[in-house]
Image (cartoon, rainbow, N blue to C red; front, side, top):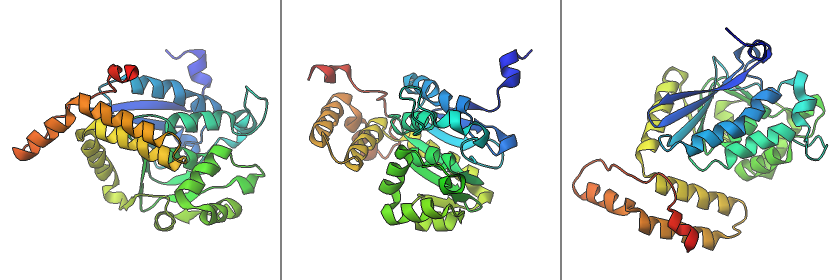
Length: 276
């Protein structure tokens, strides 16, 4: 029997597991997966749980049903954008959820089908890799409702697509098809909808089979470069030391020479790095 809270809550984040791949499902399909305050607040504790689960190597984010996300729930928008720590309306729960996803240390894939609008784009933009079906539609729409897009979302959009494209998308609020989003640098791949979920599943499985030390190290290094390069040398040195302690190169090289598939063992940074 459902509790009173479960009966009144609209939308949630669900997790589905397929071996080493965990899929976060934005589940508010009746509203095209519009994100409520409660849904934004679920990101951080959910990602903490997935970060601590050594069996999870890759995280996919998708929407329930036929759409990725129509963005922040407009009826809940003031509470969503309110920052309880400062009292300002400058991103609040949206920024907290987006940053939790962007700082997650394991690789993430946004699997985008249908509408990806407003705050939905912030979720997709915070993932490492964005793959979309050819029927997807994108839009960044703050100018249509008289708000200033959260700073974290603007910064990430500028880094991904450049200032001119960011202004075009933010100023116009126009919807664009997947092919145009790809041309503007928002996506890594566009896949026919008929084979979309099969290709996403296969790609996530390939990532899970690679050395997670290699992926997490290079993710960290790329993110440091993207943020301006502060502590780049130290970050690279830490990962080079971790690689030397891990045994991953030996596993990979031995398998390559034997023409076998490597079975990598690394699941997290060696605690000995803390003493170096």
